[in-house]
Length: 450
Ligand code: UD1
Image 1: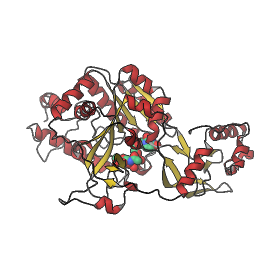
Image 2: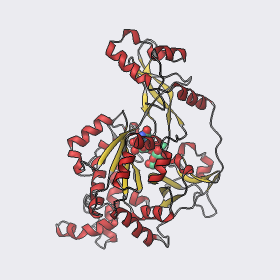
Image 3: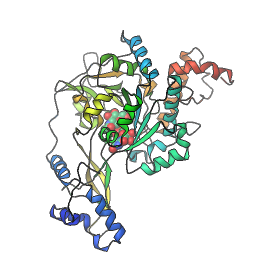
Image 4: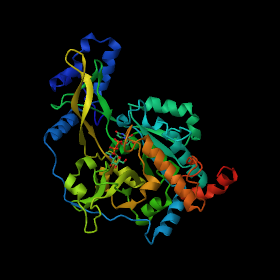
């Protein structure tokens, strides 16, 4: 559940002694099984860590580092062809492992289930997990190898996610897909008191995707990747169906540069887009989260009118295995989020309070990497995340982005689609980038209708 368990025979007493007695407020009236469950939950909580985090949260905002712009590698690089060849070698040699983080709760999307099970706004209504499973299968087929895939879940969605995979026969990937579980942390009120979710359970939430490095190590997946011969891990979020996780250029630049970590970026669509930005922070490469970037800096431009901090993080990273090994257990800094948290009042009635959740972010590993690069890609090719039920980054915008990309692929291939006709659905097993699209095109046109 957290960094280190609180030990001792009398957990309720230990909590009372630390000013957290409210966790056991309803204890005496609970049936024995629920008492045991609550004690088991409490046992996993590191009260020292929580105290430190609450003190950090009350200490006000920490000083912002001095920022400077960062220069990315682009697809115009003279080394592009070498990078693509290098990346293809890595894939052909089976030295790439995929890693999807899918432990979050997807609250903003208003979907009552793991985001990965959300049906995409495409004619087949294919869920995100199935979509990425097709990517993994298609990349494995293309590179004539079995590329391993690890998915991070959390206690909040593990069961439903595993049931989903089981019900779909592991999307044809049995034996080459594994799950790891991230840790959970309690939510607290503004005074640092742990909140209850019910009379017999604590309000726990996933510890952020920074927890993914420890989850890989704890769950044995790091070792599994090693046994599979993985050299570079291609990390991505479950919410961006346009992403190509098997991009030879991105993987190739990683190997060519001898870097330990990379980030794919797109130019921000507007200064206040909700995307972290790659920058130099106190002289070191970093990603500054959008919630932590002051508005004047978010809007600052150079003489040509370009945003100084315009390299938007699309949360797709390359990570060397040796770096993951070194970072396992190293700990990343915690960020505090103020959120509405459903809980109970002293008499057990439900209410919602503003409280605090603590999360670590994977990109906080960047400053520790010996070598980091950012790779600029096209938004229209690779970024349309599913975050909200309506408006920006919603099913509607994702559907449009997928259609536009397909239309563009046909145009680039010299077979433009008639503007009036419906755009055919191209799922990743057919094509997951323009190269694979070109390979698939003869079959697509031969099957008629196009
Ligand atoms: C995230 C990035 C932001 C980036 C944007 C691009 C963070 C903190 N910020 O923002 O810099 O520009 O995506 O789309 O991530 N997840 C877990 N476990 C957790 C928390 C999250 O697995 O404990 C997973 C989620 O399932 C999801 C992903 O991480 O796949 C992103 O989480 P989300 O909260 O949606 O991040 P954003 O605020 O959208």
